[in-house]
Image (cartoon, rainbow, N blue to C red; front, side, top):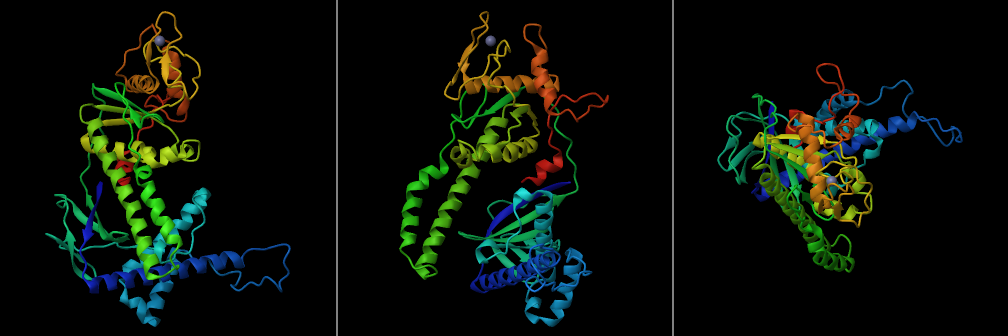
Length: 431
Ligand SMILES: [Zn+2]
């Protein structure tokens, strides 16, 4: 199954804007109420040893079940009979809100580092979703929303042929309202198979990415706008909080941030298409970019969006172009010679040129492009494109790859070569 998410800008009338705001406000109140209900249940089931019952009282009966999604959805149906303002919003839309909250809670318990779900104010609740659509909801330049009606859009790209619109989301951004349409197709696409031409990419600090032949420098998207941003934020300090001028300025700042994000995304996609155009296999390192975003180079890493490029944009573009994409082990890529594959020892960050320590080789190359060649070699070795030669310690190179993924097994129940292959679902879902 293939899913595409297409985004279009909406051209709403004043009445429709009012309706969107009403939807957002009611959905937000349902979200916050359901969240408070869950929190109250947890609070009432806590037992604090240093509090007496005079200070801490059980409001909810001990045997009351936890307000899960099914219980809250049932309660919502009952509430709609009593509270007429809830009927102003599509019932499925409200159920989606409860699902969203449920997902936030499940995600927190599965991965506490994501943070405990928060109550949402008007700025933090900016979208609502219609989970079901009629098949005739799309027309040239307009879309029919359930219980709202036809709405004009700026059709920046044609609807995909052979796909059915499944879900629809209205998103409020600083620059206006947008419509995200989720298209689905039951067609299946076979996974790409390795070809002849390969490329290894080294994610670097000096360069954005480095193919084996050149360094691609990343534009500094936010840094270029930093001066303007600083000026606007300084002006904001002198305005009364909540006043009309304060709101106008806030919107201006948000628009600037949106522009930076759009420019970055546009550049990522253009670069990904350029890189994947002439090759069959794309090999990258399996780097944990989250740690990069917290370390010494957090500003550069977040400004360039290198993690999004390597983990999301590149695999998606590769899949769309029918190219083979895998991740190889990152360990020691800068310590290995790309020509003779000798381990040359650790390099300092300031050392940007690779000089081989093997007296028979003495190969000299920029550090990043050398690493890219090593990554390419490891990838080729993993998919069986590269030939093992007796001149280099193959065991070392393969050892690096195998070490990373010991649990994975190949068809013969032996250790897999350590490649981290994304499934098709991951690739499509990530867009
Ligand atoms: Zn060498």
